[in-house]
Length: 248
Image (cartoon, rainbow, N blue to C red):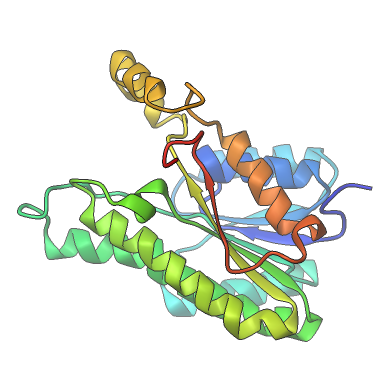
């Protein structure tokens, strides 16, 4: 018996990095996976093939969770295709870093829309089926930056911090229906994006972390499996920092 057998999960922004790691681990744990992507069609097709080969049902949807109506339609399609929605992982996110003096209104709005409003859109889209089932686990991806802030990332920090308050409110509203809402706050996670950075800089960051290494997408995926599974059935409204002790 696998931890997520017979459960259907929606994962937003899953074609690379953390999202991809979550999709693969969920499939390995027996979950059927519906995932979204914005533009990487080839990567989405490759992921769909890889997940189906594990022996579960998987399907990719090109969808923009930052658009309210699109998110509602997506959830309806997934429910029709998969029969249930048991887990939602709101992982889609972007950065448009700049000092506050230089940040444009458009760059602020875009980051809030993709990182925060999409969480509202997708959560609103899945709560009816979850309420009907009287079960569900919602996992929202914040960041160490949402907990402590970061110079040059006021838009990103605001979006990731907003997720904390939203998730706690959802936990309070939906707990009586056995729907849980939790947050994961990743620290420095090494992905394709960080692979492009200067190695000396990256090593300096690693040295500042108590566990002396960057995290992997698998580290985040394992925490997601725990929060998605019945192992965490009495945990809601919490933020789990997966950061190697960075904020300790």
